[in-house]
Amino acid sequence: MEAELFFLNNFNSLDKFKGGKLKDARLYGDGYDFQIDINNDFFLVEVKGIREKKGKFRLTQNEYQKATEYKHQYIVSAIFNLNEIPIINLIENPLDNLDFKQVIVTQKTTVEYHLRSQISLKVS
Image (cartoon, rainbow, N blue to C red; front, side, top):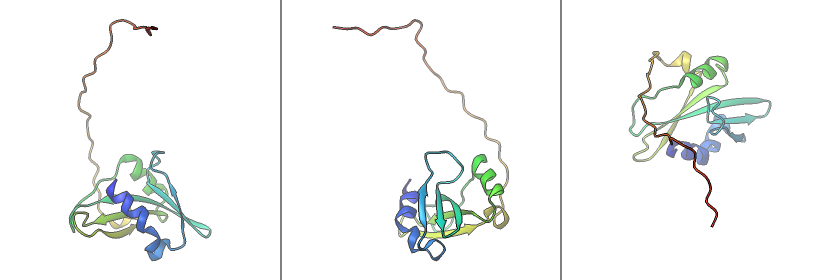
């Protein structure tokens, strides 16, 4: 969230996005955080925060699929150095420019507690 807010406040200072119109897509679950429209073109931007000056990040399956589908319009905005003075590094076409490996993550078992019978609204 911190990295996304930093990007929101600073995207227009980047040459690539100057004058662009930003659309927030974080709540849609579409595999990217923002769409930036510039003239007749658009970019899908996934923001990743990295606390130090170097580090790693992961892509979800949905993000990976969007990066595959929109190769040249898909950009990862890696926000480095969040612990001090953040720096934005744009990674265009991340699947061709970075080395990812597939990792299958199995979900942990969760415990829920279900009511045995229905309850009713009590009116005073």
